[in-house]
Length: 109
Image (cartoon, rainbow, N blue to C red; front, side, top):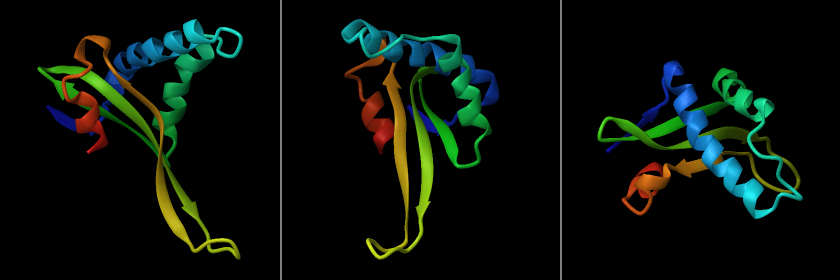
């Protein structure tokens, strides 16, 4: 297994994983979540084009087994807290057949 930055030609594979999660949310609470719309599908390209965001994938046996969408933030010094940089995991998914096999742990490491 290896974790690396996604390649542009793999964004649709990431979208297939994103759909798993969005469909799960929509099934669990259809009053709140719409499901995997075209707008959400296209958002992967917004992430890709934003210099403050990255998508990392975990490759297992030659296939993408999971991904994480990361957002980098810089918080300036303020009266409330010191200047700091931090990373937010905005999306995270392990392909259903690959769950409980260390893919999520590898992504988090």
